[in-house]
Image (tube, rainbow, N blue to C red; front, side, top):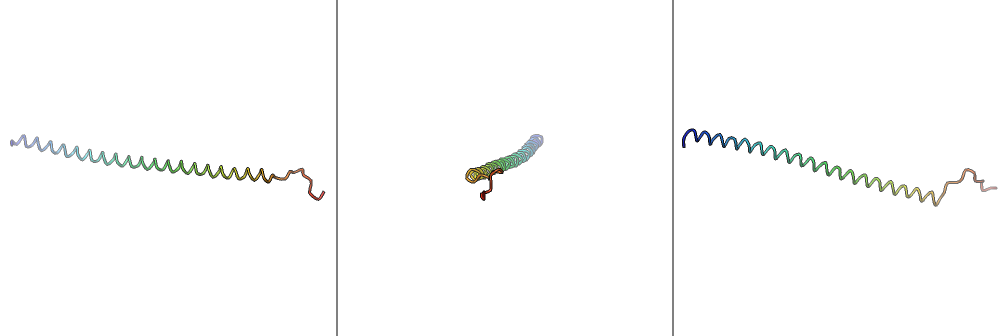
Length: 84
């Protein structure tokens, strides 16, 4: 093999190796970004679930208050005492 051809081949391998490293770094970065996106999505889902859960608790509490007001209405300010 001629010296020029060997040099060209060597530079080609070096370029491929450099590109391979760049590609590997890009894949790692893409994986990291994908992982962060996935974690953000999970966090959003957890937050939405908690909000729904809180709404349900508030709704249940509101229903209990309504039942209490219906079954035991507050005494009127103008009602006469029972002793009369």
